[in-house]
Image 1 (spheres, helix red, strand yellow):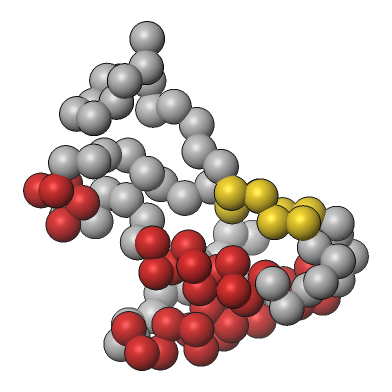
Image 2: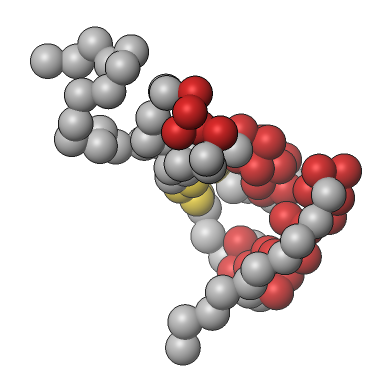
Length: 94
């Protein structure tokens, strides 16, 4: 069964909400059994107009997730992103 958790919160509650989210999905038990996790945020655009509309994962959320996961000292945390397949402003690939 697919599950989704949606919460409205203030920025000052972010760490608490991240913790509640992990607990809601029973992740603490699962994280004790794995050696690594891969975080793949959405980083789609560097255009300010689109960023303001929320196309990218907010850096504060990425930091809060990493902070939460850091309480598991055995866990290797990887953060990565794949190419979106289109050229965007500021992208200097081939």
